[in-house]
Length: 177
Image 1 (cartoon, one colour):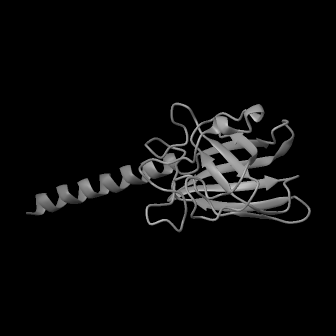
Image 2 (tube, rainbow, N blue to C red):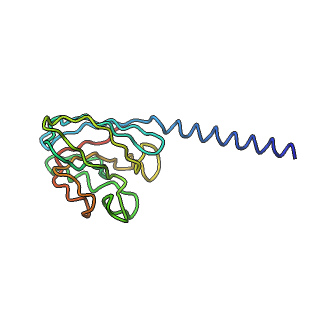
């Protein structure tokens, strides 16, 4: 019996060490985004950091029109201004989710709360998003075609399908390691 307890304790201890090491490897991973408008003018940056339960997005924006703006992670890492950033595809999603926090089948993994930009057009804000990861797996923003961060012209209503009625895409940036 004593030998069994020692073996079980060793297995549990090794599992905890392995789990902690795996969490440490994924935690702290970072990515960056340079946001531009359709003409290529810089609109700011974002720093993404993997944390235990999702990704923390640190925004530093300038020149964004004042008011409410939808912001989402989109499914494709391509920001073609001539195509009004439609090249970024739809919102990042990993299952049959619907858009919005008010949907019983939502939200998309790439849905985030609206930005509230002041009159100055400059905004520093931090957003937590639990639906994505910078690591491996289905929720990774680093899949085969990458992902992009997109800011929309209007606020997201968190309900309308497929994108929250948030209007045109006014800024886009590819998420890069």
